[in-house]
Length: 220
Image (cartoon, rainbow, N blue to C red; front, side):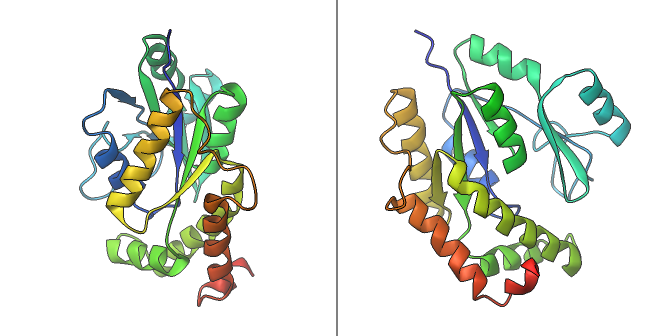
């Protein structure tokens, strides 16, 4: 039986999802889908590793040709997942990992109802802001725009199958692998579904902390 699963991982920019994923799947036989984007390449990034970096005209041609599984605009840039590699790898029995934002995740869930959605939460908005600031790649206005977007994404994380907290890297990696293994074995008991669920409480705590933080005026 082909038990290949499609895992969709989302997290706010600066939450460290790339580090969590590289640690979690470094010794796992999974297909890691590389998205296309129109944003500029950051220092240390490589073409075809973090993203395929293309111009807006080429991206819009991919949309027109229906070559994308999903796509969205995020902070003035396009991001999208190529369809063919995902379909081919699932057919071969390979688990597929998509690292995309919330709008794209829900597009995938609509096309693939069996897709497993996992949201990685930051410990707080302040921690997210400081991490983005430490990158030194964007001005403060852009960073605040990203943090504001992060709060909106976190509010949508209730619709995910799972939510984990990236407060400690080892714990976050362990939590993610437990989710992957349980889904591979068709055990879905870890999915959150009620207001009493620990994952839901994590989401509520991050949102509540945001309302009382020094960044709370981002919503206004």
